[in-house]
Image 1 (cartoon, rainbow, N blue to C red):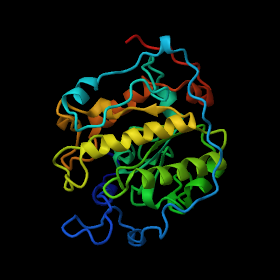
Image 2: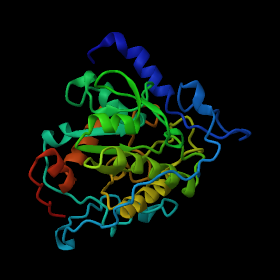
Image 3: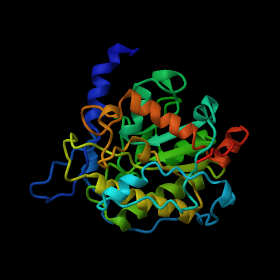
Length: 314
């Protein structure tokens, strides 16, 4: 990798920054070390407090059902492992298979993410490599869904710290792909999770109304993850079902990259994951980008200025 002088410090920070935050008083549960920020150990005093919200768009995709080549590659995994919450393959939010939308599609997307997708930057897989301006996250390379209200991310365009809505209002990207949630699901129930996720969507839509939002699944993990048990793929798939429901609620698309990385046992494919069990390796990240290109959102393509990708055959 280029920029070798950054490698040790950056990789160590990113690896440490993703461990899940757990609430105080959990007895034998792992310590709260989700991020390196010292102030994130204080959860919001009232996480369910109402905020000013934009009215959700409730209309689902108008794409004719007959043209939707639904990607069912993980259907057999769910059938074999009933402890996993199966994907709703009938959901209108689910992005179907399409022809490859190409590199220009990837180049038009901002990745608002926690650390598993942050590694797209570390592996230099996006435009401008390590200096890409397409990855938005905290200064340590991660962030936590439970603490995003008022949280300052590192704006890669100028290196300034700004809140997510401030950054969106200033930069107004055509497309934001949201991948958050693995940091938080160890202690967030459905209501807490959805409340914080709604706040994020509402703030983004209010700050940059013309930006197309895509909701991406949380990725599978392996049993090598240091906090396996506090987080499992049973928990991951349950949270992914909540994200699907939020996508339906807002009329937004859902990108099922979980299915691209899951093995027959319902865990992340070992050959696509780093040894920490949480972050996809270079091959895994490359496969994620391929999945994004071959499950292209028509509205995102339009926002980027590309023609719509043809639906692929099942």
